[in-house]
Image (cartoon, rainbow, N blue to C red; front, side, top):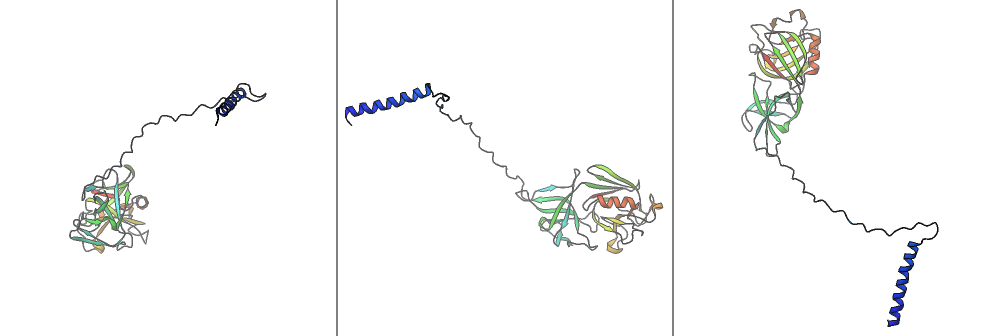
Length: 272
């Protein structure tokens, strides 16, 4: 481009700039002047701390952790036939199916769990509804399902009284008949292992029974080995006396309440 051409181009550019300034300074009638937009600068960014790593479980393989106490108890319902052992991988103590001899689910009272490195339970130490009273064993976690229980029962033999607690609060207290001297009610720590409806609500067991994982210390040759239960009665005038064969009898209306509230796995303390 010649020198004359460069001068002409520069003049045209300058004229365009001047024309733009004139339009902004002196807008057309009815049109508001709009100043040029200021450049938008990005806001200063805050430093972002890296996310803290999620802590890994800190269990030791084979660690045993208690599960009973503190207002909570746990029930283990058998889902597949299993063998209870005296220790994980040890000697067989008893065998259980999914349904017990009375046609209801087999339930065991959980005392503690043995976990792996990821804190997953591999074994449960459980109370067993067998002789001798207070028997325990270990069962594989994969063969049972676990549920939480917030109730507990106290049977006071000297007071002839049954008390039910739920979440630590007394919700039922009733007078009871207990075992006579020749067939005493056994003391100890047990659990509700089954609840059974009676075929004859007007009979000696009333409307039903709350079965306990305890057995009579004397009636070993009775049906099913002489299991102990809290049940109703057709002789309410004998409540408060030591007249039974080891079971605990209570008023029928109270038995129905106990039946509804004390689920399988409920701890039972029978004290002298």
